[in-house]
Length: 434
Ligand code: NDP
Image 1 (cartoon, helix red, strand yellow):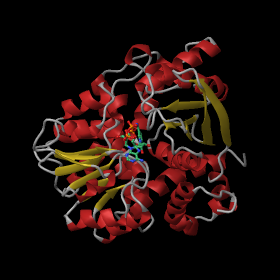
Image 2: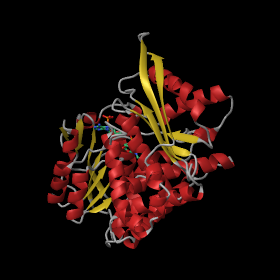
Image 3: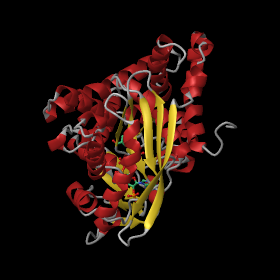
C-alpha cells in the first residue's frame, strides 16, 4: 500500500488473490523462493500519456491515456480499453491484474494487460469520439502490435470505437495488421460471437453450475445489472435457455418489468439510439423505473448477474438477495461484489461464479479472433459459439478441481485464482527472473 497509494481497487483485487494462494505457498515454497509474488503484482510496464483533441465547438480538450502491460509470461499482453471518467492508474492496474489470471484460465496463449482513458464518451458526437480515438491511438500505436499487446473493448469502448482506433493504427503503421485489436467489425477481421461472448459465456457457466445441482436456468427469475454489451447478451442467452430477466439498469437507475424484459426494445434504445434505460419504461405501464441503480438488488430473483461495474453489489445488497432466496450469483462485470458481499454469499451457500472465471468468455473469444486473423480465416457462428461453450465448461471444471485439490472444495474464487496463478507462475519460473 505504501508503494501504491490511492489504489483501493488494486489492493482489493490483490488481497483476494493472495488470500486464495495461501495453500499453494504452503504446499510448494518454490514460488515464494523465486520471488513470483513480488514480480506478479508489479506491472512489466505502465504507460501514461496525454490525449489532446478538439471538440465540436473548436475547444481543445485534454484527457489522460493509460496502458498497463502487466504480465507477458503466457503471450502478448491482452485486455480491454475502458473510457470512463472514473479511470485512473489504480483502476487500470486492478483490471490488468485480474486479466492475468482470467486469460490464463482460458487456456489460450495470452498475457494480461488493460488500458483506457478518463474520457467520458457520454453525450459526445460521433465526430468527437472519432477525434478522441485517433488522438489516443496516435500515442498508443507505438506500444502495441499483434505479437506485443492486443487491446479490445470494455466500458465505453465498443465496435464503433474499435473501428476508429483500428483505422488510425493502420494509417500510422501502413499495414493491415488485423491481430492488433479484437472486437473488430465482421467485414474487416472481426469474429462472429465476439459481441455476444462475455454475456453468453457468463450464462453458459451459470447453466453448468445449475446442472451440477440437477437444475437449470429454465423458469428462473433473473436480475441483471447494466444494459451494455455484457448485460444485453447475458439477457439474450438467459432468455434462450428459458429464464425470465425482470430487471436491467444503467447509471441513471433500473427498470423492473414483471412480464420479462423485451430485449429487442432494449437493443433499439441502447445499441441503435444510444439512449438511457429509463426510456424502456416510457409507454409501458407495467414497468417501474427506479432512479437508484444499485437498488436493483432489491428486486426478488433466483439468479443475480451483476454486469455493470466494480463494487456495485455491497454487503447490504447481498443480504437482501439472500433474504429474497437468491441461489446463484454470476459476475459478468469485473469485481462487482465487494468483499463483504462475497462473505455473505459464502456464509449462505449461494452458488458464486467470480468474474475472473465467469466473464472470461469475452477474452477467450478475442483469442479465437486472433487465431482467425493469423490464419486469415473466418469461422462460422456455431463453431465459435461451441468453442466458447467448451472453454466456459473447462474453466468451471478446472476451477472446481483446483479448489478441491487445495482444500477449498466448492470455492470457485479460490479455484479460479489458484488455477490461473499456477499457469502463469510456472511459465515465469521457466522463463527465469525477467
Ligand atoms: P458497456 O459500456 O457496454 O456497459 C456498461 C454498463 O454498465 C452500462 O449500462 C453502464 O451504464 C453501466 N455502468 C457502468 N459504470 C457504472 C456505474 N459507475 N454505475 C452504474 N452503472 C454503471 O460495458 P460492458 O458491458 O462491456 O462492461 C460491463 C462490465 O463487464 C465491466 O465491468 C467490464 O470490465 C466487464 N467485462 C466486459 C467484457 C466485454 O467483453 N465487454 C469482458 C469481461 C468483463 P451507463 O451507460 O449509464 O454508464
